[in-house]
Image 1: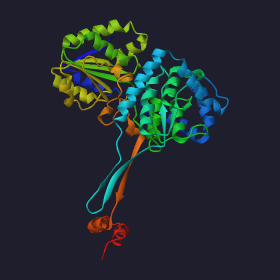
Image 2: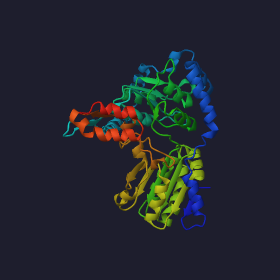
Image 3: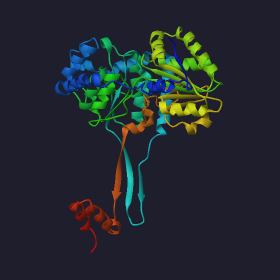
Image 4: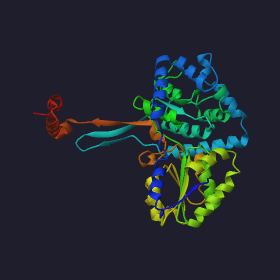
Length: 432
């Protein structure tokens, strides 16, 4: 089949584009009942349900509660055993991610008015956070770094990581990354069971305040269902990339960048919008050549065939308009003057500017968080960051002068709303 090649002048383009906009739709209705049952079982039976779910989904049966957790010594052992070059790469990534997130930290503040009114804001980390790290088709230590470092920088005291352990095996590099980040609580459970356990607690897992991290449709549905009892970062779907390119882009680069997302998952989306028909055709040809070189060719090919698209627009203005509607998770801008286009880009999880900034550099080494909104939700969601692990409290203190100055008008508003006690609680403090 190959990647879909569209032109905005085609008579059926609007229909085809609407299909692209629906790429992130997850049919949660089909799994809601299953997930609700899993949640109810965890809430009722706690560890017993957790162990039964692991036996059912992860191909091993924990005999004792203690088997659910990874020993801290095993994390240290995994860290010490990794190749020195890999260890250096992890440390470089760690320091860059930490530095970037430290710049995100909001500050508490207090302001005093002339009449003695004191107003402010107190920023406080949540007490605990649960990080979900996938472990199905692949293990992602980089996701651990992104989630754990943001939580650490925010000041979260307790961090618990849940990850599936098929056949009771946890990726050694993931454990090494946990040790590097100072994570000491790792639980070998995945899917909706992990989300429910972190939200409501079991004998082994104390409940948390916020749950972050990506996962499959069962994880996403569970996060949606526990939201309100705990906070969550976002409801993320399959990975995706958008590319805005002009005639200056290299077809081989564009092809590999599109494939960098396609290899994640059969449901991943790879979309390029360009003003050059020549680039579009050359990139499509390069994709076919490059596919045969990939270890994950089968996954990438299905993604490209079913959810990949190259669109030829009449102008860069039209290309940007279409890309803003798509609101991609990752957006590369590979044009002659990419920074000139930046003010026009409204909706994207992360924006990669210039020919030497492939999306992959953001996944591992740049510093900004790679946990990003998908499926068009970049219209209203932001990347994961320290604020996902923080909450804000308002600070209010009125002097006698201040309550006398503003009290009468407060009383008027309270009485207008029919709240007599509200009004009287202010009136009894006013000078007669």
